[in-house]
Image 1 (cartoon, rainbow, N blue to C red):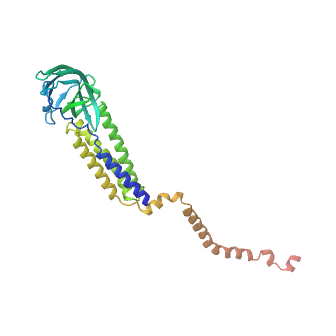
Image 2 (cartoon, helix red, strand yellow):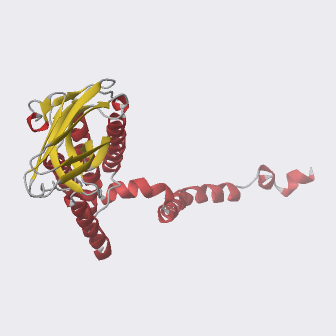
Image 3 (tube, rainbow, N blue to C red):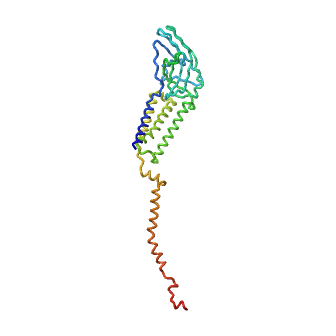
Length: 306
């Protein structure tokens, strides 16, 4: 019992630590001194694309991009690549990187105009997603990032939609399994282990809520949002599992009765006792029949001589 409780506590700690791990996108890089930059997508500055006014991305259409950098200090600024990516739960569902080779001397800004072909966005994502624009220098290091919110007009058959459906299916299986064990009284007797049994489907419900509300464009699954949903789902499942009743011994005996040799032995002894009880009533009858004189024995010797 002590070992099972220790294992349950360790599993709970691993679950909590896994939820607290920073799965979100890397921390925003601070712009180096003297760097001024701006990016417009489809004529809008990325800073204006928020949850209330997301930037709409339509698959199959070109997305005009304007990148402008300035060197406010005494050193020139070089930007080799610009990347636009959308991330949820720390996973990148679409990424578009373009080499721009910008070089801005002090007092002389530099800019590039180009188009991003979104032809494959249809099968990558759908719904509201947090995104970011990343600038890289000539060494491949991140120079600066800026966050935005995009509204991808993709399909539920995309990678993002399929991932959400798969998570929902796994969650349903876990929940049905936990409820089936609860109905049959097959849950562990240890409360902590029962809590963990229901914490997993609760965690899955947090994932499903994240993908569903994102696909329906109800909220933006930013790191604080999906972390809260996962924590709440796991906590509710953990609490429900902890409060489930302890499986009764009677139900367990009834389920295990066909495989119980002691029960079969007791049943055999009961049948034998029943036979022994009926025996005394039958033995006198047999003795009476055995001792009854036959008709030939009642005939005398004289009558037999005749």
